[in-house]
Amino acid sequence: MDAFPPGVLSLEVRFLCSSCRCKIQIDARWEGRVIACPKCEKPNEVPRWSRRAPASVSLSAAEVDYLSAPRTEESPPRTA
Image (cartoon, rainbow, N blue to C red; front, side, top):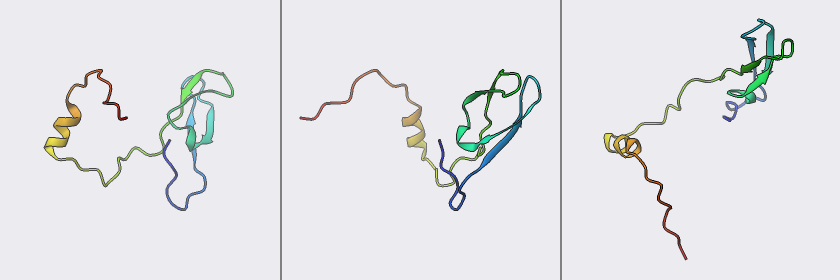
């Protein structure tokens, strides 16, 4: 889970149950998890409070190629 922005002690997410439209309010640290609606008990995914990628991320074309390449199931070499 992502940490809250600097200076923010708590953050709540508010959304409606996808089944009964009950208002749900929950700590943002539950983002992305599935919870039961307190009224109808149907599963609901807690929305993410931040959809932005970190601004400091920038990759070269070579890094993109490397990260996009298929991986094998090999274990990393062991060190003694």
